[in-house]
Length: 169
Image (cartoon, rainbow, N blue to C red; front, side):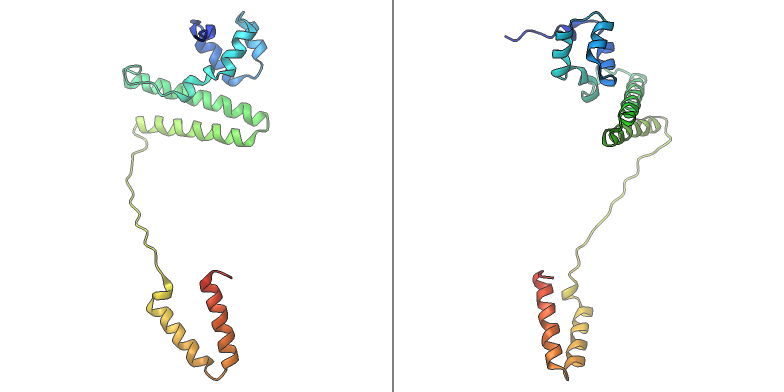
C-alpha cells in the first residue's frame, strides 16, 4: 500500500499549496516552512498542490452564497497572481490563460451582484446550396446564351466549372 503524502496531512497545507502555485522555488518554500524537501517535491510532482484550482467544492463545503463568493474571490486572486507571474516570465500563452480565468471569476462575481444577467440567444443556421438555386440556374442560362457563338470558350469555361464543382480548384 502506498505511503500517504505527509504534506497533504499537514494543517498548513493550504498555505504550502498556495505558495507552490505562484512560486517556482520549491526548496525555498520547503525551507520557509521547515518541510522535508523530498516530501514537498513528491507532493508537487504528484500535483497535490493544484487540488483547489481544479477541484470544485461540493455544496456541503460551500454552505452559503457568501462562502461561494469568497471562494470565487480567492480563485480570482490566484488567477491574477498566476497571470502576473507568467507575464513577468514572458510566457504569453499561460499569461492569457490566467487572464481568461481571472475574467471568468470576475464575470461570476458580477452575476452574483446582479450586474450581469443571463441571456438566452438562439441562432438557427441553415445550409444553402447555391447550385440548386433558381438564380444559379439563370446564370447558367445566360452563360449558355452568351457563349453560344464561342464554342471553344464555352468548352473551356465548362471544364473550369466542372473542376470547381469537383473541388479541384
